[in-house]
Amino acid sequence: MAILKCCDLWAGYGDKTIIEGLNLSIRKGSFNILCGRNAAGKSTLLKILRKLDAYYGIKVKKER
Image 1 (cartoon, helix red, strand yellow):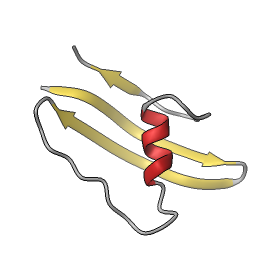
Image 2: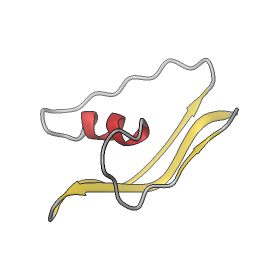
Image 3: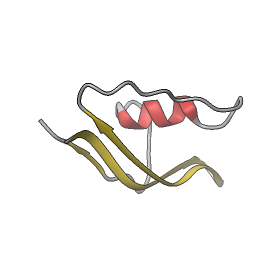
Image 4: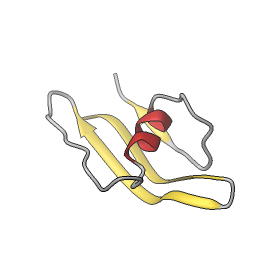
């Protein structure tokens, strides 16, 4: 069972799209790694998932 799931996530700043069409599912007890090049959107994704940043078009579902 997924404890965090998002579908078709996209986000950006101004006219610049940072994340587009991301689907993510994290299972309880799983070990996950987020890696990528500089300025790839890793921190932006984490901020969105924690709702610390302005975001657009996000659908996040948290299971208990």
